[in-house]
Amino acid sequence: MSDLATTIHNERTKLTATWLNGLAIAVMAIGGFAPLITYVSSAESSLSVEGLALIGVICLLLSAALHLVARIVLGRLKT
Image 1: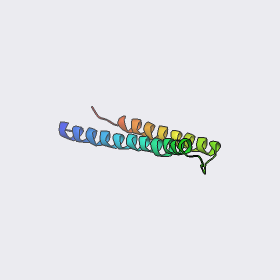
Image 2: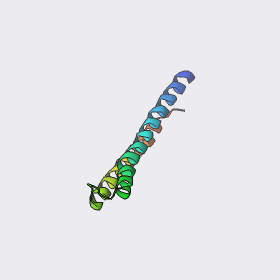
Image 3: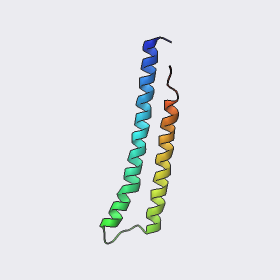
Image 4: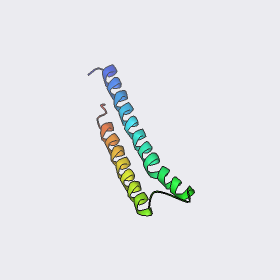
């Protein structure tokens, strides 16, 4: 593979990994932190503490999984 083709492949791979990692951050921010902030700042909340904890754990696990997929994608870089 030529140097230019390798460079293009690597840049596309890094772009994909960056997108996946950004998605992981968004999932954690929206699904994990937003309900917590709403719960703390509101006197009346429709979520129980258990429901809030469950959403937080699910979003944390999904975020971690997306981050790990991004790391796997980076493993496809060519030298």
